[in-house]
Image (spheres, rainbow, N blue to C red):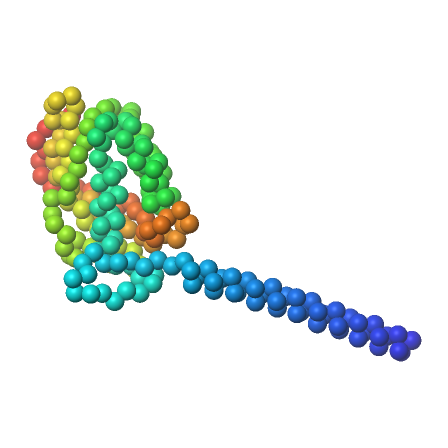
Length: 204
């Protein structure tokens, strides 16, 4: 019985060692896959002005890039060359991966509110009124930015201008690593309420 017990104990120990080796092999393979993936996919942001060169670090987020990102996508959302009823909704859908889920829901609700209020049957154009300055970008914790966009909105119904006003939009830009987001940034709504900078010439 003693010899049989020793044999069983030895076999059990060998089985335990084999399982440990299998687990270690799986862990090593998983770690190798993670390292390979990280080595082959990372985000590098190039500053807009390279006239004086730049020190670029993978995963670093830059204030000028946050401004360009916010300006591009906010203007894209608010330029309605045909009709807001179609253009606004189409841009929300086409660019949804560049908005955080919370802000995407806000935009979808905002679209529905404007439909009910009859505020989309019009052409809209938007352009920035203040040239870029680093003072317009505020750095928040966790690689987040606040971008101040001063934009003039012109809305036309038929041939009549129904709105021509300047509004300050304080937009929040945050890192985003979702696979569908190729830019690594997303709009996350407003960090303060937008406010009118002038008295509109005409209102609907």
